[in-house]
Image (cartoon, rainbow, N blue to C red; front, side):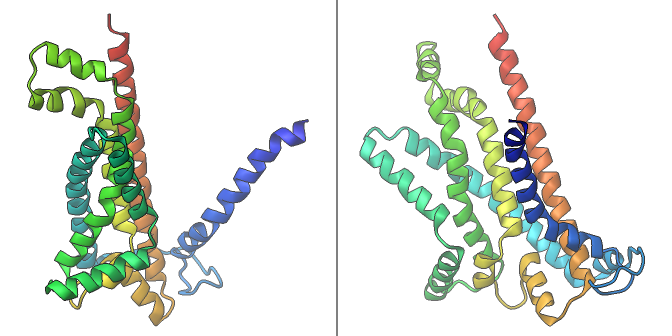
Length: 268
């Protein structure tokens, strides 16, 4: 009985080991003074120093961060509007169709999305670079925000809106003082998910980036093809740690929102 109860935990440990072992291996050798990923010859921070001394790499990192923040902010606004539109569509068939179309965009292969945007931008004459990457990241982030906000809208009781209308609230007041505060956790979740997806994306960005502009994912791929350098390990480690910080930040924001909601419910 005890063995059977431990099997799920053993399975989870095994799965997480398979997922994180390559990342930990990469992080471990980012401190290797030997310059290879075969023998660890001593601890050093030289590879991290090289990352911060590489001007081109720092510019690419700044480009990546700007793209991620802009695309996350714009896609959050569009995603919230889209979720509101889907929620308040009166015809059930139309609502289901919109949700299905949104979900199709999420499960579509990145290669197909990237190739489609490449063809689109070439046809309408948009030069590949900052604008093309930004538009592509917004496009694949909006469905993510929609799917994070929709559950909060669906669980919100319609009596809240009815009560606000009875008190004479306008449509704008209902949106700004009732709906948006209630779905704030979903909005934050969508923003952070869009941010992390933008930071990590490679397939779509690889298709739509042009000469003179690149992101960290594309740069790491290009450098890895030229040969193994522990500078790539150091850079990948920094990106991984940044992603963890974002996830932890989202967790604490979500916990704070949950506590504030619980306190409001307890108020007489």
